[in-house]
Image 1 (cartoon, rainbow, N blue to C red):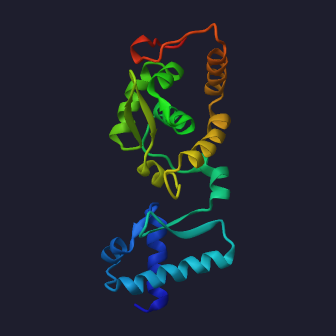
Image 2: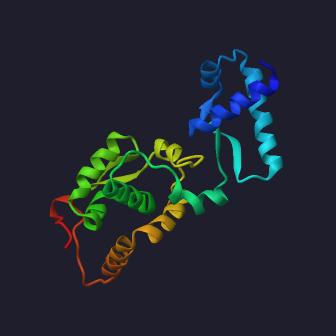
Image 3: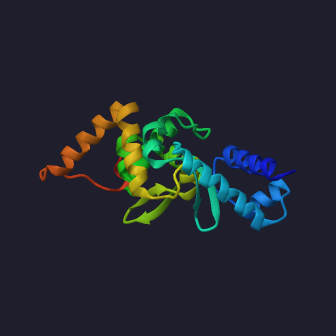
Length: 205
């Protein structure tokens, strides 16, 4: 194939992948042996998208990987339309809450979502979308690099992800917003005491 055909093939690969790809991965997948040539093709595609002033960009991330993605200023406005992993609605709701509040105590998620969230968290951990670290008598939860890749973020930056999912929570989960406001109100009240252990949590009414 000629340069134009090779460039089109690389562009197609970046588009369908939906995640960062290394030059080595592209070389193996597309059968283009010269990685230097491949890198130049990607740089050419990236410059063309930049010149168009498109909402789409091709950028280098995570050291040596390239990704085609929606620019950050647009992604936060359309994130709720992005394809989701194969998760049930309840699991998606729990994942959105973790993304919004991270790093967040598991006990707080259980308070807001009920005991069903234990199973949601287990599934999300199995899928590699969140991490869980021991923290006092509970665990601390947050999103992973795999989550960032699936949802179109250039990196797993909690600040950027929290801001994006703030809009998702307020747009799609009014009941969670209400519970969050009630929880924050109780936490600010010095006369209200609550335990941070998982064992003490009941299903919300």
